[in-house]
Structure formats: structure tokens, C-alpha cells
Amino acid sequence: MQLIIGNKNYSSWSLRPWLLMKKAGLKFEEIRISLNTETTKIELAEYSPSMKVPVLIDQGNTIWDSFSIMEYISERYMNNEGWPQDLSTRAVGRSAASEMHSGFFSIRNELPMNCRIDIKLPLSPAVRAEVDRIESLWTELREEFTSYGPWLLGEFSILDCMFAPIAIRFSGYQVDVNTICQTYMDHLLSDPHMEQWTHEGQKESEVIQMSEISFR
Image (cartoon, rainbow, N blue to C red):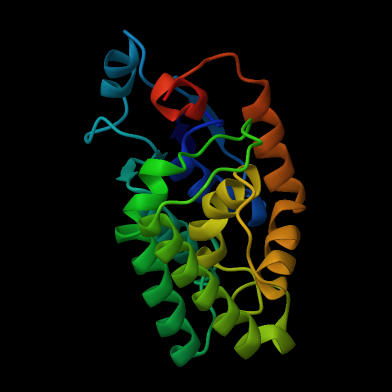
């Protein structure tokens, strides 16, 4: 298997399937293409029909989009254990993951993914509203599934991968959340694979100015 990803410091979408594959103990070749360079499109054209990352290439299959890659990995290599076996829990998880996949644009735009960032910013009303929604969602899930484990649905799932970049953002921009959410974030960010990703992202030399608050 080959997983084509972007800069670890900036590419939130790349992190999601990478984390699932690492947690599943899968062996794969990691191909990193630096984004926003003169050669990015040329390099991506070799792998990505959408000209975006991430892309998974496996046994003749090319899968793009983080969500699709994770569903494929769950079905092919995890006996569908990327999601809980309980139908109702799985439905809730997929709904929350889809909300993340298609929403929270103010957070994406105003608090860009950046593993190196460590600054407290005043939040715009639009960002604060989205933070409040995530805080409410996480709190509801943790209160419902806490007896099953420390992850959003109790056991680790695709849903945790979907929200992993949010945890990096909230931590780096020092976003205040309630104790339940902070406990979950601390658990997620202390996962060895998450620590590996953030450490390697921090060590990257490339700078994408649009994702650097200091340049705004």
C-alpha cells in the first residue's frame, strides 16, 4: 500500500487516514508531497485523479478523499471495525463524522491546521459558534459512551480520526473547552501516533504562508 499525503504540519485531511492505518497496525509506504510549490501539481498528477491529498493506492485500487480511504481500510483490513458494531452507535458516529467532513468552515479558514502554532487568538463569533457546536457534540458523545472507553464512541473509531485535526487546532490556538472535552483532547493528543505526526510536522522546513497566522 501507498498513502500519498501532504505536509504533516498543515494537511489535516492527510492526517485522518494515516492515523487510522497506524492504529490498525498496517504497513504502508508513506509518500509525502509538499503542497503549494511549483512542482506540487506535477507530483500529484502521478497519483491523484483529484490533484489533492490524501490518496491511497492498494492492489490496483486508487482511493481518494480521507473519508473514502478510511471506509475502504475498515472494510478491507479491519473487518469493518473502523466503526462500532452496534448499528445505532455506528449511525451516530457516521453522522458526526459527516458533519465534520462537510462543515466547520470558519474554523478551517480562521484556525488553519499548523502543528507548530502556539498562540491564543480572540475567536470570531463564527468560530466561537462552531467551537461551541463541537464542544456540545464531544460532550454528548463522551457522556453517552464513557463506560465503553476513552474515545468519542468509547472505542477508537474513524470518528476520532475525523476530529484529530480539530484537537491539534484547539491545542495550538489555546481554545478553551470544558473539562470533558479537554480530557478527551489530552487523551487523543497523547496517543503515540498523534505525537509522531505532530512531532514530524513541527520538524518540517516548508512554510505555507496562508496557513501561518503570523503572516495575516
